[in-house]
Length: 126
Image (cartoon, rainbow, N blue to C red; front, side):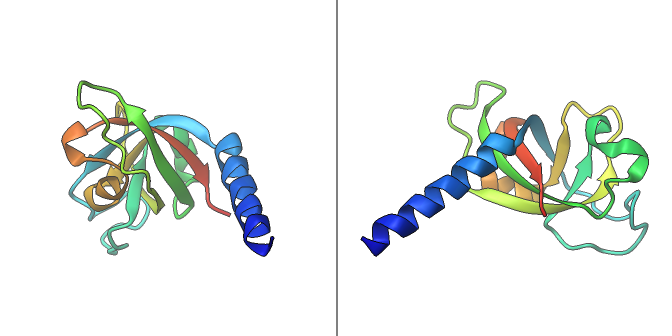
């Protein structure tokens, strides 16, 4: 009985996350320094650049987002790994085709990098 309760709680948390997530588009990039938010300070590899839809004049700098691949945007079939990744916004990607431009390392966790561009759900990490 205890295992069923734990499973149920986990499923409810999962559904709440996806019910409150925002759909968007993700791409990836490979040059992380300098960045619009932190200049020449290295912020690691689990980072992202905000597209114009998220940027909001830089107020998103330093915010954490959890991103999950939801499907392809091009002919690459089944790009998603089924995992999510949490990234820190460190840069701006003006006029990018994506909502969020992930580091290549972060993108690879959630999708096959051959895809290059994917549909995602994202949510600001509390």
